[in-house]
Each structure stands twice: as structure tokens, then as C-alpha cells.
Length: 405
Ligand code: SAM
Image 1 (cartoon, protein in one colour):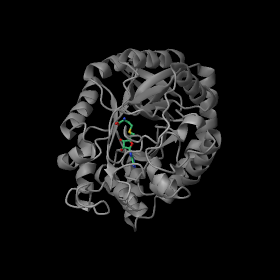
Image 2 (cartoon, protein in one colour):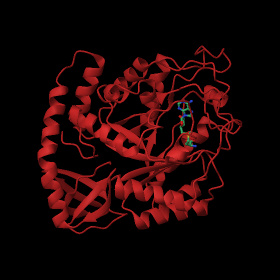
Image 3 (tube, protein in one colour):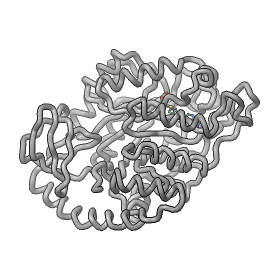
Image 4 (cartoon, protein in one colour):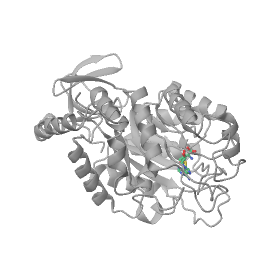
């Protein structure tokens, strides 16, 4: 997961391969893996990540073909209703993005952070939190399990801003993962020098998950005192220029810390600036939008604030879909936390088409407490995958980034 479907390379155009999937053609970069015409390959996020022996590919395609078109029919049927905002957004998602649903794994390898973001449970000043760092060996073992046992083909490596992982150490980890596993690597490390991200790209990372949190520079200064919105947006632009696929977005419902914690205040988020934040996400060049609700953590200065309701988050997803029909829009774990039973389903039916599954080893997962009671923290990962596949099949979605529209 993303379960890539193998496709056949029908043409090579400079750095691109043209790949055929059940008659539909897509382009993918070939700088990670160089296929020849006629090869079967897995592509992920627009990159060819692996060539597959023809016999194996044909067997997988035979299995998929029937299921793929059955799922497509279910999706089309469910997307016919267009009365409510969510139904309209779902119809647009179906029309422009087909039934594909990216499912990335996320590995949270350290909960140390040098920052003191007012909203975040792993902020430096939370002395009550037990801290952990995964060793290089542990990271590689977790990736091995996720790729070889669970079938993930795109993984996000996330941590607090933890400079114990030096540039050299991070490059070694990325290089080692790329050498051993066919997987697309996204980094979510926070702010590092552009030169470091350049080296990490050369080591084989191709994606970056980095939110700008709020597009209001004044509010940003208050809630994220160690950095500025301009620096954060500048870094996102640099990452895009370096060639990274960007996942970005914001924190919905962040309060104004100076206006009384339970209110949004003049620098808190409201309907108008949700739209500004959605626009800013698109302007950042993000290929995947990630915006989730702020959930207060008891050991932060915003402990007494209130986060947004599920309906508010779902409406924002629907608005984002109507504004940007071709975006990938994530159902965040925070959204699922607001309603562990129905949150994912509701998000997918309001215009979203991507998800992440936590693959952090159990003993560390509960310590990555950016907010309390995160959905999925106690779940056994294979069971969580089964449950998610059940949901995707019921909704007619194919857990791959190749959709048929
Ligand atoms: N250090 C990296 C960075 O700065 O991007 C990644 C780790 S950071 C903990 C990942 C994301 O967690 C942040 O971008 C933020 O939006 C989200 N987050 C932190 N505290 C949260 C809270 N209380 N509720 C919801 N999301 C939160």
C-alpha cells in the first residue's frame, strides 16, 4: 500500500516512461529506476520505483483486472448523488481522480523536538513525555516489515525536529532503504538546511511532508515561535525546486493564543481563512493536501482550547475538492481521531482520496503523542490494513495511486 498495480512501459521520453494500465496511459519519472520499453514496472507518486518480472506482473494484473473494474463501478454508483456539498465534492473527486486511493505508511522514528510549538504534545518543554529515538537498525527493520510483509510502496519517515539524526545519519538511512527496498520515501523532518534536503534527495528521498500550519504570518509567529511563515514557505518552495513531491497543508481551527484560549479571536482560524489556507496549500505546489483538525493536548499552552468539529473538517475537505478537482486530499489521523468509527469513511465520501497507516512499532507509537488518543495507536497494523481494505472495497476505491476515470 499504496498497492501499486504493475503497468507496461510502452515508451521512453527522456526522463519519463509512458506506462500503460488497462489501456490508460500515465507518465512517470525514471531517475530512481531505469526500465526499458516492454518492461513491467511499479510506479508510485509519478516515479518508477521497481521493474517486475513479466510473469509475476501478468499474474497480478489478471487478479486485479476483474476487481479493478468492479470497484470502479461501485465508486461510480456511489458518486451519482449530487445534492449535498459532500456529495458534489465526491462526484468531482470521482470525475477527476477516478477511484484511486493512495495509502502511505508512516513511521514516526523519534519524538524528540527542539521546538516549542504551542499546539504540539511533543514540544520540547513537555517534560512529562517519555522520549524515544529509533536506531538505524530499528528503522530498517520497521521498513522491511512494512514493505516486504505489509506491501507498502510509499513510506513517510517522520520525527520531531531532532538534530541527533545528523545529515550524514539521515542520508545513510535513506540510501540504505533505497538500496534494500523498492519504496518511495517521503521525509517529514521539519526545518533543515536546503543543502541537507538536497543531499537527502540525492540519497534517494523523493517526497516531503511539511505543513505550513497557518497562512497568517502573525498567528504563525505566536503558535510556532522558533520559526517564521516566510521561512517555512521558502523551504517548501526550495523542496519543490529540488524535485520533491510535496504534501502540505495546515492545522484547522488553531486558536489565537492571545485572545483567550477557547476563542478563535482575530488571529484564530475561521471560515474565511480556511479558504485562504486551502489556496495557500495549492499555491505551495502540493500534490497532496494534508489538513487536519487541531486537537488540544493537556501538556501544552493551548490545553484549554477547543478544536474544530468533524463537520467543519469535512466541509473544508469538500470545499478543497471543489476548488482543486485534481488534488490528492488526505484523510488525516486527526480527522479519524474525531470519529474513529466513521471519520475515514466520511472523509472519503466528502472528497478525500488518500490515507496514511501508522507503521511505527507499538512500543513507540503511543509515545508519539502530538495530541491525545490518536486513532489507530493501539491497533494491530495488519488488522488495521484489513479493516481499511474492507472500507475501500465497500466504497469502490482501489488502494493505488493509479485510478481509472
Ligand atoms: N517536525 C516535523 C514538522 O515540523 O513538520 C514533523 C512532525 S510534526 C509533529 C507533524 C504535524 O503534526 C505538524 O505539522 C502539525 O500540523 C501536527 N500536529 C502537531 N500538534 C498537533 C495537534 N495538537 N493537533 C493536530 N495536529 C497536530
